[in-house]
Length: 98
Image (cartoon, rainbow, N blue to C red; front, top):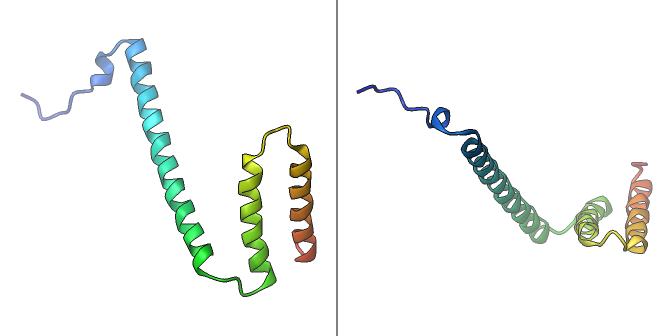
């Protein structure tokens, strides 16, 4: 008996290997998505727990919320998308970033 692990992938057919690769990719994607949800929850907890001490900090919070809102808009909601773009441009211009 050998102490070397068996490479089961080499014993699979092409369609079985593709199915395994897909399952692995999906598991990895779900793991990354879970990490992102946890990081987003931590960020939001931080934003809630700490009041902004300046206008730029308040604008950063507003940017975050506007980006979340923009991501939820349908492609046909051009008026709200344009308004968000204009507000974000105002934030940049008024903070000296643009």
